[in-house]
Length: 429
Image 1 (spheres, helix red, strand yellow):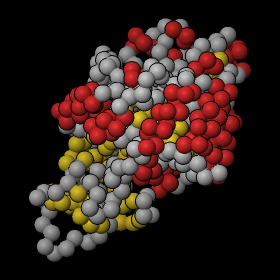
Image 2 (cartoon, one colour; image 1 turned 90 degrees about the horizontal axis):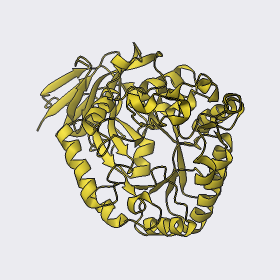
Image 3 (cartoon, rainbow, N blue to C red; image 1 turned 30 degrees about the vertical axis):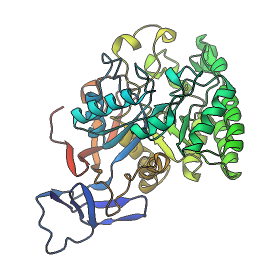
């Protein structure tokens, strides 16, 4: 039985509110205790975390890993390593792979390749419908049994409301969480930017806020009848926040997340036709960004994700409207969280809760906490270390970050999964 002792660090466990200097003891891949080591505890390996933060490993609720199907953009191995270097121990992978994750065999393929990579956990999310075509329901129970923690539309909205209703009913029958994307396909499919002053000035078709509101309204009406656990991914607008807040106040079992870039960037960043800012949902107005930040403070939005979508250079090279949307984000998720703390948006404990225990609860995981007996998924980082976000400092195979050139706080020193070190800061890039 391997025993590890982590000492000297400031331990933060958002679940129980613990925040103080303590030792963390690990044994056989699980948390043994937090506090002074018993006399009989002889560690096989010790980690000096003096001056650093020790917290649960991060859980990223929305990632695309390129594999299978788009290995020229990224692979499970490359993105799992990048995630580990950013303190992420679990990557929830959206099902719009090629082939789509709509059968247990594809899920098993993901598990095998993730295991071979030997880095961060990869948690496949099952497709709500066969081929994500929105026509026939997938075998959700079989997908859940194969290891899918939730079912998702992966951004491909189910257009047929009857099919959506039946999908929510099927999932609720087996207590499977459903992750939906609030984007009306008719209002959003032909746009590229927020339908605002920048899109008008650039002459680029816009995506109105009503695209988010219309889909939220349709889905919430179904949830009100079915009462299954439903999570809405990547909110982008003040109006969307207001709808979710009203639904939660009325007792509906709904939660929501926001992509980290929406908390910093706005439509104004798109003014230079830079395709790195071509994102879905689009960057919206300053008032929307303010509302999203406020929603994190009051708990309407409980999760922050990277919305990691790696693209190769060719996919981002060309006129804005001809490029592929998406940004790589696993490298920068933790550092951007620390910037929000520096800007006094919320406390460090609140920030960490949004990427640890909150997504763990949505997916029904036993990680995201430092409770004795829980899997030893741990992140140790130096909050005062500074680094520059540049192509050569990103470990992701893709380099399509909208934060290139930013000075960012926080460097991860160690990342552990099941008590095994999967990243050390002194490892070469």
